[in-house]
Length: 410
Picture 1 (cartoon, rainbow, N blue to C red):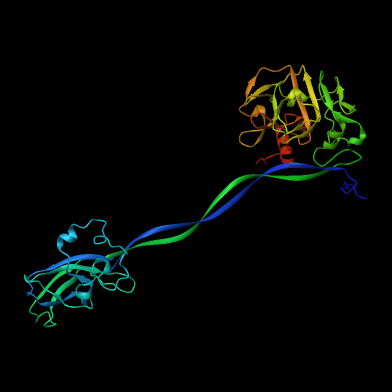
Picture 2 (picture 1 turned 120 degrees about the vertical axis):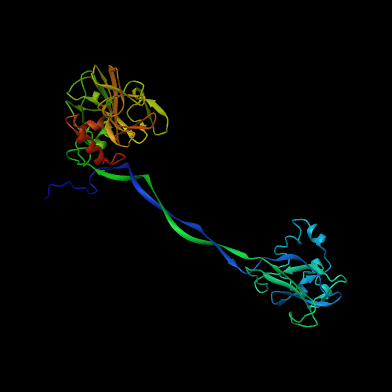
């Protein structure tokens, strides 16, 4: 036979809800774009260009070339310079955009090519001039290449297909160059770490013979009808032995044998509940999110986070150091979860010392947590069970950590 505890079905147990914190890292992919600059291309967007040749032989047919490409069917000689210059900035003549991007000759909507198309010759006027609009087409399969040093736009007498031998020839240059704006698209991963709260349940078993469990040490089961609690001269206590036995309430000083569902005690013992006490009127949050003053909380009430109350204690004539901790009047030895998330004695925080109270109030609940107005977390009276010397802070804080009360202390 071993000396270890058996935790089989015959052992009484309870489920304790506890809270912890963990770091969770989240990631997401973000698409970024970086501009790399511009690349010149020898293509111009679709555009109408007004042209006028002068000094040609009068009334002579001519071929019109853009670079080395015959473009008679892309020209219409019915337009004058005033037709072009007086057109609105937003007109299709000035800004055709993609309206005629599929046209295979001068757009029909603007009159079509002179003489019906098919690269029919264009005849100079009696004064030797030849003018009109040229549609510079540009789409995937059909476009007119341009050059950075200009592209020749010329009229050539059809009698001799040789510029050097022709009797009538005129030329000018069109300057235009397209650009691509180059962008580099890439994906990066961003990370963010957040501190998140989580809850978990822990099964606590009790020694039926000695009324002990692995967390609290001491305390008797509900069936014994007897518990132990420590307090000082002038204290009164209200205790529910059934709840106290389930919580493992143990002896911390001088008085034992409180019996009955709500036993009331006058004085005895050497315990010191004044070490972890609150002033009259201190508000604590209940399970229904309402608040009750500590002197009005009774055995059986259920507190937020702390669970059901199984004992209340009122002390008189105690001498303690008292402090104002964010509006809560409390004794200096009481542990509090401070603003930095670390459990400390109140007197070791930035709390302000105040005049002592003659009467003190404290209680015990199943989870040993009390949440005051302002969402401030305190331990209950049961904290003093973990140490004989209440000033031994390092030991008490270690025990708070072992209980996983809200945050590990580094």
